[in-house]
Length: 91
Image (tube, rainbow, N blue to C red; front, side, top):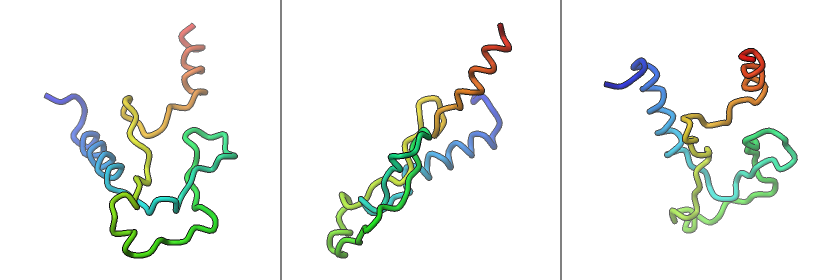
């Protein structure tokens, strides 16, 4: 059997589908390089112009909008403060 509640399983499946299917035109968005957040926020690219419709028909014109799901089952790394606090409490 599967560990966990069905609602958690369904939520995980929805996240997998969303991350695999949510696409945007290549170059329309970029990472905010000045940000110290991890992962870096995605922002609209300034002065972006849409390619011609013929170019948009090519699969290579599209990219995944969301990052991949990490091997730990999350889409972002756990906050470091929480991990450090837990280690201090165990000591």
